[in-house]
Amino acid sequence: MIATARHWAISYSQVEARRTVVRLDAEHALDALKGNFVAASLGGEVVWRVLPLGANDASALRAVSRAVTLAPIEAEDREAVRQLADEVPEALAEAEAVSGARRLLATPAVRQAGAEALEFLTEYVTWGLESGLPRVLRRLEPGSEPEDITVTDALSPRVGLGSIWRGLGAAELVDASALPAASGATVSAADVDLSRLRPVLATGTATHLVVFSTAPHRATELVTALQP
Image 1: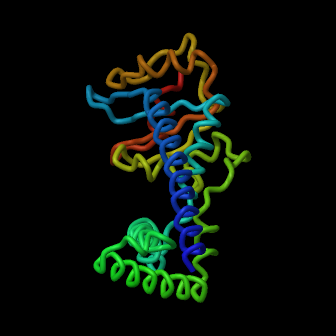
Image 2: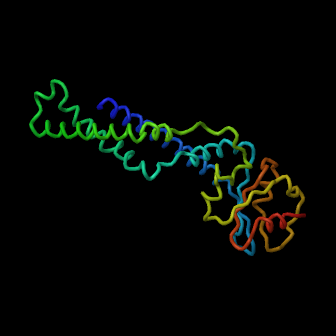
Image 3: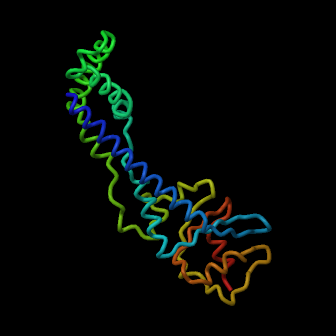
């Protein structure tokens, strides 16, 4: 029982460490993407926040996707998983303190704690085997980075930039190839400031734009303003 409990505790610790790395990679990717936002104003107020996306951004989206698609810890499993992180390691330490020759040197209080720890671990492992805890641990293991994610998936549930940055407004994906060429274009409305967006489009590296619009505005208005 002790060996099984120790194996589970170590496995969960390793799984959680890998999940943490996945989440940190996603945070770094989001920070990098957020640094590419370009604001567009209407009447002196920022109405659109535009995220240009090109082929080089796919790796960042894949990192985000890997975190977004991490298997959640279901409500019925939370207590058991929490115990793997807290009570089980503590019980293992108390049981180890009275194992073998160490029992001869242990005080009555330590021996009592060790006996209670062994009883707890026995019950925990018995319950874990019956309830499929090893299966839960395998499900929590992070999957590999999804290779099929492209910039067109930026707003899909597998990436979810619209949900992640919902505070920026309604998100829409615009195909940059459908936009007018930036070079030589003029602002079609005097109250629309696209001075920061046009140079980005002029580089030709963006294949798609994720446009966040504050209500009641939409991406179509921005596209219209870009028309020469």
